[in-house]
Image (tube, rainbow, N blue to C red; front, top):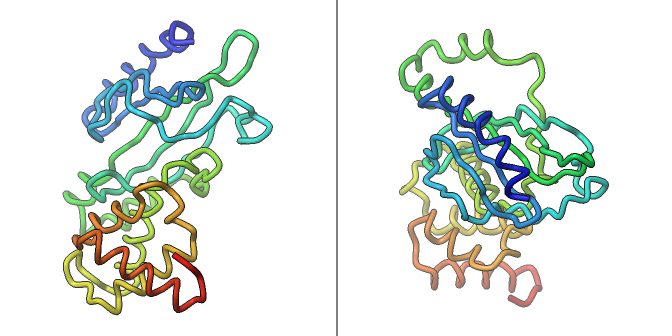
Length: 216
C-alpha cells in the first residue's frame, strides 16, 4: 500500500514547490487512516499522524467513486481561510487507496490586500465552489467545532476573549444540537478553544442537557 502511494509523492512535492509557501499537500492512506506524506506542512502535521478520516476504501459508502472533490473551503489551524481540493488515489485495480489533498492558504492575500480583497476574490473565485465534502471529512470533528465557533463569533460580532457566560452556553447548545460532542475529548477541545476550564465546559453542557430533558 505504502509503495503504491509513494509514486504520488513527487506530484505532491511538485505542487507544493510551485505554490510555495502557500500550499500544503498531504497524501493520506485511507486504509490505515494515517498521513504517509506531507509537503510544506504549515499545519504542523507529520507523517504517521492520524488522518481522522474513518474511511475503509468502500467508494459506494463514502462517495469515492468521484476522482476529484472540491474545491471547498475550510479553516486552518490558526483560523486562516484555506481553499482545498482532494484527488482520490487508486491502485491498479482502480480501487481507492488514498487521497491527495491540496490546501491553499489565502490569509497572506487577505492581509496584504484587505481593502481590495472582496474585489479580487470576485475576480479569481471559480464559477462554482462546492460545499465542504462532509462525507470525506466526517471524522474531522475538531475542524467542524472550530468552524462552528468561528461562525458563531462572526454572527454575534464577538472577539475570541469577549464571550460572556450566556453567549457561551448558547454556543454550547448549538454545538450539542449539531451533535459535535459525540467524539472523545470533544468537550475538552471546546474548552481549549473558548479558553475556559474543562469543569466549566462540562458544567455548561450538563445544564443545557438537563434543561432539554436529556441526561448528560
